[in-house]
Length: 396
Image (cartoon, rainbow, N blue to C red; front, top):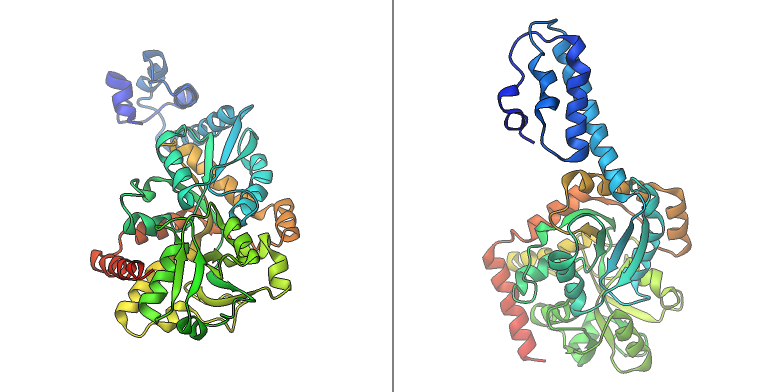
């Protein structure tokens, strides 16, 4: 807020200030912030009298005004959320990793938002998360009453498929991510394909939702750069439907699933050794998967290394939580703090542990940095990736 513009001719004059006018002035500041209305002449009259007094009062004015401003903002956030219901939109269907993480988070975050609002979950699957992302970016109220969780690779998809992802991911207010976890490409244990070398010898049917999602992009990149024969089968409605198709033998595998989410949603697959991990996609190997190759380690030259690093970058922000663009800054700050407090909440941690959901908090500022970095990727790298995907897709 521009204090000089608000006060007009009633600006505080240079000079020594009187202590007896300190609190009326500070109260005016607080009232202004609390009501979000401009200063009136009455509010500013105290500031006009703050002249020719004790020099030391300047510091006191600054400190008390700052305290009251901050308190007024905090009270404003609390007043906004008190008695409200916050909608938490999850961009996937029921039962998968995103749903498991999202519902566990929603069970606890309300207690950490000022005003303690009720939080309700709404699943909004479609187009590998684009349906929910479009809703949050263009339609949802921009007041902090709607939060979201959708596919962590949306920044990459903005660069690769700008017609499908026609919004700017850096415009979202990223509150944080619940874990940094590798993506994995998996096959069913009876598929006869247990390694990348096996996938070079025969055609492997891989279920996918749409052409622009990770379930289609990752297999096609592996075909182009590593010589595999992964055939993308489109039309599935969600990750869970692909996995059910794997159990039925309709497809051999799935081309992109977050490892921590798979452990949470389908733990029987892990304990029963029902799947093979062909490759893990991330910036470093997951400690659970010491023997599964890391895609970055398979790069044969700088070009491949740049491509593999680009598609691996989102693994540092798995299961991200966000607010739409345009939410007032003080509410974004409160929501980021609520996210951090939830991640440290013993009750949240206990539920996450019970559901076998690893938690490794990534701050909102770091997620914002990752997204900004992804959408700043040089055009020549994006062109190489798009060409590779296009060539591989023509071979499906």
